Image (cartoon, rainbow, N blue to C red):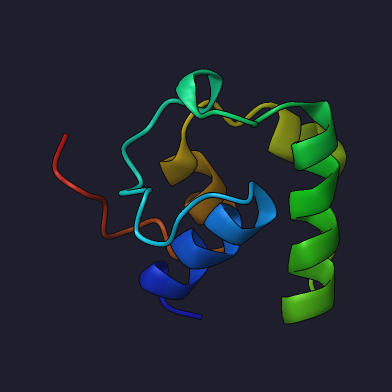
Length: 80
């Protein structure tokens, strides 16, 4: 999965318009990011990638880039 694909997956989880996220956003500032979207993200990653993510690790993420790191694709971050 590419960085672009992962961002689109997060946008889809949050029912956001495509290309809304860059990766530099703070999750607390992203509309719709809450405990339910955390669970939806975990379920989507499991379904799409076959990779279970521990809920505690996702809950500790503070930025979209942190979510990308969990997927193993956070090395290339958008300029902050």
